[in-house]
Image (cartoon, rainbow, N blue to C red; front, side):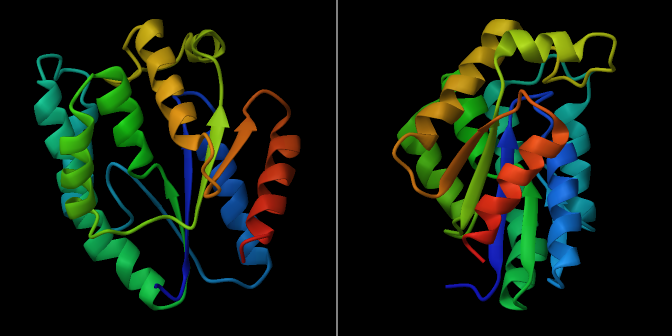
Length: 206
């Protein structure tokens, strides 16, 4: 059991999670808490994990094999957990992560159709068995996300089809079903309304 709290923000592309996690960081710091904001793939101040992130998201890497993609995500996660997350939790800090392993099961299992049981074992090994205290999922339909995605720069995953992004969404929702560590909130609404719902839920676990 870690001393700190590990809170993960999940959501499909253009769900607003990066905006919301920044607001949550500001809110928690205003309460006097020590907060670390990090992300996956990659990780705060982790040179190795961030270099892996750049490889994964490079829009020129169109020939990346789905197994290669998975293994890169897991390599980044292993480095991220050992170098960033675990030390912060051991110090009693609140760790906010923009994505964690739920993304693997949404993107690589639900959307890429990789083997669930095999990936469960690999992922648990890569993350040293670490579980989030709370997973906040910002839910948005693939069609609404597509509307938000127009006229923006795209990374390799942004360029996937609408069907792919809907499969990702269903992958998230299936994980959230009957799981009390998950909090599902609609990503359709004002930034302030969504933020208030998230703050209230986070307060309940601190």
